[in-house]
Length: 319
Image (cartoon, helix red, strand yellow):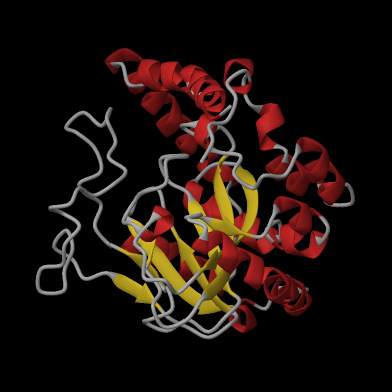
C-alpha cells in the first residue's frame, strides 16, 4: 500500500513539474516577467489610499522585508474575539499536536475543519485594512490564501519551516503572523534575513529557495552577511513579512512551544499557482466563509477559481 501511495504521490507531481520546467525557459520566463511588470505599472493608479500606520508597514516591508507591531496598534475590529477563539483551539489541540511531533510529524497545525468551524479566524485575514496593506505592497489585486494555525513544539529540531527558506508562491508575497503565545528567543521567534540574495541565477530563471549547509551557518552572528531580524513578542504580536523575497524561518524552539496564526497573500495570478492553496480549506468551505462579505473580499478569497484555465487545470502540489 505504501508503494502504491508513493507512486500516486509522484504521479501527482508531474503536471506542476512540467509547468515549472516550461516556465523556466528563457522565452517564457522573459514574457511572463514583462507581463508582470506591465500589470503592476497599470495598477499603480488604482492602489488604495493608506492610513499612516499601514503606510509605515509597507515602507518597512520595502526597506527590511519585515515589520513588527501588535493587534492593539492595528486596532482592527473583532481582533480580540478572534484571538480568543484561536487560543481556545490551541488549548484543545496542543496535546494532540505534541503527540504528532513525537511521532515524527514536522509541520504541525490545527486541522482546516476546525478553522472552517470558526469563521472569525479565517475572516480576520480579509479585513479591508489588511487587503489594502497587501495590495499596496504587492502592487496588484490581492489573492488571499487563507490561514494556518501553526504549532511549534520546543524540541530543538531544525526541520520544515524551521530551516532557512523562501516561499515559492510568487515573486513577492505577504505572510502576516499573529502570535497566540508569548515568544522569546527560545520559543521559536520568526526570523528573517534582510538580504535580497542569493535568490536566483544570473538571468533570474532558476530561483533558490533553501540555503545550503555552507551558507546556513552563522559567522560573527551573521548569515548571508547580515544579522537576522528576530521578532520576539507577547501574545498579540503581529509580524508582517515578505516571505518570497527574503529567506526566513521559525527559529527552532527549545524553551517553550509556540502557537501562531499565519495569513497568506500574493498577487491574484501568482507566479507559481501550483505551490499555493495551502490552507486546506475546500472551495465549498471558502464560499461558505465569505458569503456575507464584500465583493472585493470574496474575489480575494476565491482567487483560484478566477485563474486562467491552463493554471486551473494543474492541481496544487502537496506541501
